[in-house]
Length: 348
Image 1 (cartoon, rainbow, N blue to C red):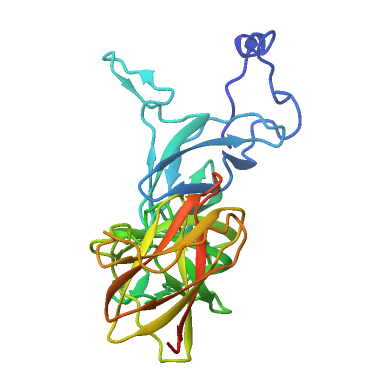
Image 2 (cartoon, rainbow, N blue to C red):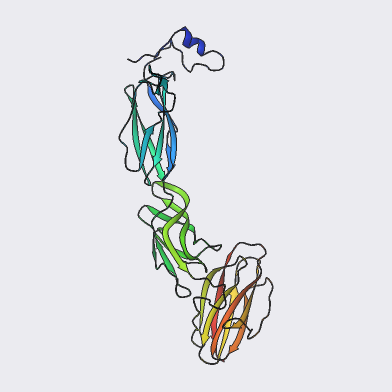
C-alpha cells in the first residue's frame, strides 16, 4: 500500500492560505482510490493542443504520490507528459520529474479527426479519458467544380460520418453566400449555385454535423475549390443567359446583393421581345436596365421602382448582343441577398 508522507510539517502547511482536502487520520486516508482528471473529457482541434492534469486521490480526496503511466494512444492524437511541470533538482543540480508525483500534467495534440480514448494508470488505479479531435477542414466531393454555364447547379456530397443540417449555408469566399437549391433528407448531399465572382475559392459549409459530435453545428472549410466567373464587368459578363423559346419562360435564382451590380449577357438572332422580372427579399432598391454588349449605351426602357418588388421590364430588340443589368440602387445596408429572375420571351 502506498502511503502519503505525513508529519507536523505537512500539517502546518495545511493551515492558512491552503487547507488540506482530507483528514490524514481518517479511514481510507492514503489508500489509492481513484484518478481524477481536469478536464474529464478532452476536445481538441486537429493540429492544436490541450492540457490535461491528473491526480491520484484517496477516498477523502487527499493526493497520493505515485508513478504514472500513459497507455497506448491511437492515431487520432498523441499524449506527452509535461516534463516542465513541478520538476525537482537532482543531486547534480539538474531539474527532472520525480519518480513519484502527486499531480502530473500532459499535452494532448490532435492529429486526425475522430472520437477515441486513452488510459492513464497510477497506484494500481486507471482512468479512461475520452478524446474528441475536431476537424478544421474536411474532404467533400463537388460535381462539377466549375460553374461554366449560367444557372449551373453544383452538387456537394459529404464524406462518411458528415452530414449537412437542413439550415446549411454554403459560401465560396466572396461577400455573397451561395444559393442552396435543396438539401437531401439525410443531409448527405445538397445542390447549390455559387455566387458570381467566387473565382477559385475554397468552399465553406456552415452547418456541418459529425457523427461523433451529434447535435453540433460546425463551420468548416472543405478541401475543394469552386469556380464561378465574376459578373460585375459589362464588357465580359459570364456566363451568358439563354433565350427561352417564344411564349415560354425560365426562372433562376442567383446569389446577389451587397451593393454590387450584376450583368447578364444574352444574344438574340432576330427581333425579340424580352421581359425580365426580378424579385428579392428585404427592402433593397434593385432596378432593371438594358444596355448594349459593352454597356456603352442603354436600350429599351427604365422605370425605377424603388424598394417595391417584384420589378418587371420589357424590351424589344433587334438581332445582337445585349446585357440585362440588375442594378443595386440602394441596398439599405442589408446583407447580400438572392434575386429571382423570371426570363420570358414574348412574341414581338
